[in-house]
Length: 310
Image (tube, rainbow, N blue to C red; front, side, top):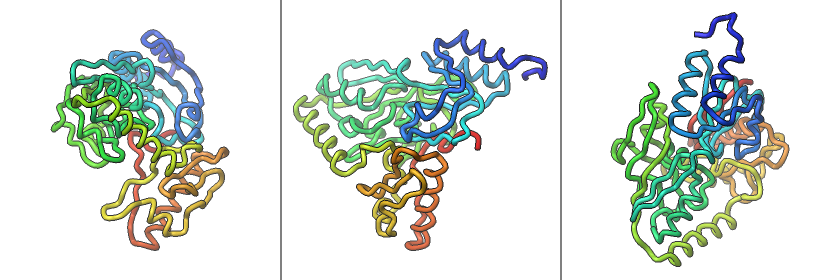
């Protein structure tokens, strides 16, 4: 426990001793796909599993809160920023290794890079992931999917850190993957890597499929604005975007946040949005859809959905 007389700088110095990059008052708008969010008290770039475990130990020692982030493509950070430590699993933990029909990726690897690496090895099964703007860690955490595939279709196991700082290898069945859900999310674990089991294919067929998915995204999704992808989960028996559009909310704005005019399932930052704008617009969509159709739509965000101080 931190003594009242012990200077705060001590924990920062300890973090610097274990990690190459430690940034103070780092704007989280630089690290979220919505491009909003205030400063993090401390932002570190993890370089290894050991880094993560050590950083968490330091956070606990000094009674500091911490959150884990990846590409920031499914998280909102409040405009007041984040007290404590943001542990980022990104480029420094993004190695990808192929071995026959199996491919292992560290948690910080981008899904697009993983899909490209698989295609280069003529491995099929990850084409669906080529346009998802997130990391492997986040994708496993929430069982990400698109078009004709999900992580659960191709994963063999995931390497994780539990809430006590112990490492485990969880095989597919132990991950309990379902629609936007995993046991990792339930038990507040941290993904550090995952193995995927694919099939041999024909490279042209694989790349053609990836190109087709990319074209569909360009045609249907508002890729020219910052967003977190599809904002709401699909309610059973419905499509969230259609419910929002049928509620007359396409183009609805709150400050700089907007229900996309191209696809009502997306809330976008038109350039001046704050996190409060986005949250208020999400809440307005939920309330309006429920009043009109009696269906409660839920946000698709995962770990730390809305993080930080007011």
